[in-house]
Length: 365
Image (cartoon, rainbow, N blue to C red):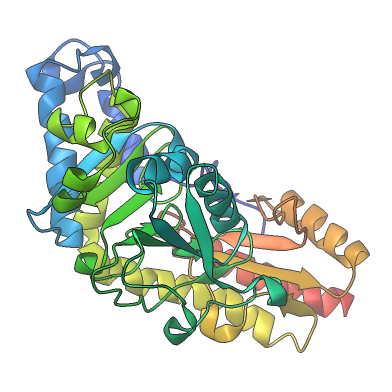
């Protein structure tokens, strides 16, 4: 089962796998982009060559997610973690409240940051079950006067994912989609703001995508530092200061790859097929492998599981590493095992992992 080519079975949680065709194109264009005699990394972000790359990435994202004209697409920096602060700085003003749905470690971090700026409250929490499930929409507690409701669409550490989003009416719904954006279709019109670090499904680390409804820009707090204002970045097409140009170029190429293979419909089909291979190995093991997430809340992107005891887990991870599998250790905060099956992870990698899991069980049960 050891790899016969030079590419590993990459299941890293992030930065994570990138599509091989995208890496090959970047390799071909690295020294001489479009016969300009320079790498795209060497082009001015104010020049026409880079401007075309930048705007194509925006157009491709609009097309893939059917984003209407009343939204702005921003390319920022600082990862999702900076958005934890930037969102309340812009919208959680004096006398306002914002609800946070706690479904894992990243939603906890976002909630903690928001409380530094204003009145943030728990709209729901599944911490009592060790974040094994996503709350039902009817369990969410918020008021029509709240300034926004925040959720995390996919929980990388615990392996749960939202499949149906609430209709929040006049309350803007804000989502951290860092780990599952462009993995399954969703209705963009339900959201006031979406943000996503690129390093899982969109490209290399260093770029953060923000999709924000234009009417929210008009309501944002103006008494904050310039670099923290969404309106400034929107007004300047994300070129207020030097953007991460190579990362945006790579993001655009990942979006092109998704378009070329058939868009979100094909990506969803592939993701469901990949995840099924591994979940079947868990479910058919009769308790040898123990999935963390409840079946109805299982993530297509991060499959989390344990073995019967820690010694067996260590043996599993050690032998998996020898067979060429990378990134199967669970997050340091919870342990266990985790297979991150993002868009760019090939079906063949998931099939190989499934086969290894069956083989390891047969030898060790």
